Length: 314
Length: 252
Ligand SMILES: Nc1ncnc2c1ncn2[C@@H]1O[C@H](COP(=O)(O)OP(=O)(O)O)[C@@H](O)[C@H]1O
Ligand SMILES: [Mg+2]
Image (tube, rainbow over all chains, first blue to last red; front, top):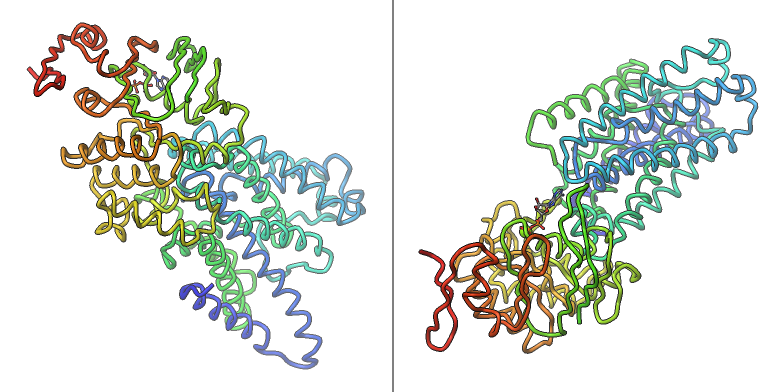
């Protein structure tokens, strides 16, 4: 598609990736590049997953403030992981086959998300303020519940499964998580296939039904996709509270387009640029390890406040 | 033909519609009248499957709305809701374009684009086509929404107070357009009106609701009479004849 904004963003992302790959390479180029390329792929997938999950969630919930992270999708995922460890013990959990565990946890997340959030989205439909409040309260609830369950777990067992409670981009573990990447890629393809229907969903419930969408089914499908994408991103780097909000807000600001065929790739490209360029600047150039997450969350938090205080309820 | 059978509806424990049975012939303009809170919007929302049916059935040409896939219904009937809002930031052209979605499912062809341009012309929206809907006046936005329902090109068109916000010029233009749709294209139009003189001038049939029941139903020529309209609105509505047409004089 010949969209100028997207083309510029794609070029910027390509440049960021190139710099990320080659800056400061010493010694065995082949080895370093292969390692970095693997990490790069994982980072790009995380960026796209968070961006697309956030965009889909905002569209079907009809607001620009709530994101899957704010209503607690990732906290719910970590809660599921923690409950598993609590139930069968950290060592046993660590010995479960990686693929089975990820798929199982993701499936539970998808079910829980549909059960909990479908009610929220339908119950408060059209009442954005009530939904935002309820969503924020839900998010806080899941986070405290997760913290509580984690206290109950023996610290040694906890270390064995390495449940991430904050984002860490520098120690991304691509190796054993190919299954997460496969699930994420499939969910992204699913989101792309829905792009035209998402445009219609964005008009609002009544317009969507009137134009022939099965609104209920769209809501369910969207929530399942959001769950898959959140599980992918959380498994790869950990929870990201405001990152999604930051990139979808930027995408709306920069692209000024209502079409999901533009918004979703646009938000994904912006997310990629923020992660890859940020990673390069903060860790390679400034030598500040593990600070990107903090900076991204700080900026995203500012956007969240600006939207709450400003006119951005929709 | 629209067949409504034993339709009842309640919000929570408050009953809103009571056992409505109504059949509207195919073709022609039916005006739905009635005081505020009579249940007109609820009836139209149910007819357009925007709310789930609680009791009773609704069918278009034998097509039961509870048993027909919603995408099929989107090619059978279109609705303009009262106080309709749009969630996205859209230009008038894009908004009207969404009316074609049931036909192209996301991939508009030349015929869809032509239909949109024709509707923009017909509703005098061409000069506003590139403007964003939130930057329009209420009446201009209303026209764009009517054009969107119109371009959906369905056999049945349901409009809930489409004249609200329109000035005299566009109100008359819209009513004449609805009349033409019925006469020349055989479409069936169901329109909720507040100004009953528009019903006298443009409708073939009148259905009046009061307290969730059908209080009056029949050909406009028969039903449009002081003795029949006055009790529905709870006020004296003199109906005089002017150049052979009935005119309600309820202003003073
Ligand atoms: N969502 C709702 N919850 C409770 N009552 C409602 C709701 N919607 C409408 N009503 C009530 O139902 C009655 C009919 O409303 P409506 O169909 O909008 O009337 P009309 O369009 O004829 O003015 C009114 O008394 C109104 O207060
Ligand atoms: Mg009404």
